[in-house]
Amino acid sequence: DTGVSQDPRHKITKRGQNVTFRCDPISEHNRLYWYRQTLGQGPEFLTYFQNEAQLEKSRLLSDRFSAERPKGSFSTLEIQRTEQGDSAMYLCASSSPGTGKPNYGYTFGSGTRLTVV
Amino acid sequence: LAKTTQPISMDSYEGQEVNITCSHNNIATNDYITWYQQFPSQGPRFIIQGYKTKVTNEVASLFIPADRKSSTLSLPRVSLSDTAVYYCLVGDTGRRALTFGSGTRLQVQP
Image 1 (spheres, rainbow over the protein chains, first blue to last red):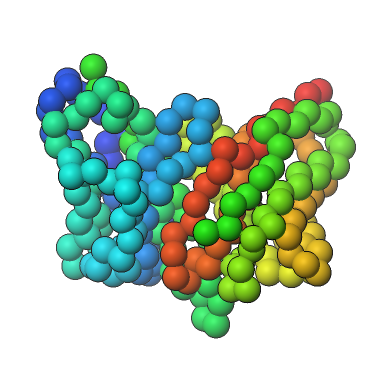
Image 2: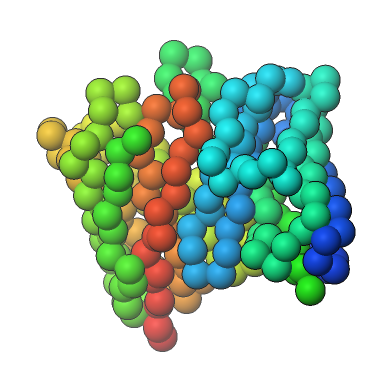
């Protein structure tokens, strides 16, 4: 397994269009996270899944954002009616709870850079 | 969620030891302290995690005093390739997702 994969690496879209990103986590990891990062800022939490269940959503995740993780494997993040403010790096991470202790760290993918023009 | 405070930036020279301190005054009993490193255009990379006292791995050491209200990431003998942003995160990752702050931008010079 080569780690967390994200596709595409870059996406340029026109304002108002819909975009979808894909994340393939490390196969044995049951938790999957989405973050968004703008230039000069730390990653902002969007949502996370444990297996196929979406357990937590940030208030940043407006109605235009939706995430799914069918069958508890890969995940998709869709942004509808994109706005220029959606331009950012979208990061996916996965983890697996350690036995007897919290998660031993997240493994992040390289991200999808979205530019809305 | 425990709020963290860390310096915005630090400068160092190759071969020096770098210590980055993070304050987390309202850390909860079940919270762990985790540090990540991020290079431009890459996702953050896990460095080290601890609960109390001292933790050491092949890349860094983490010092946590008894009251756990702060922690210090120690990078021995830094090189140019250690130039990156370092994030301190505090939380019970078994229950909630971690929240990143703005991090510390470390610049290592020759």
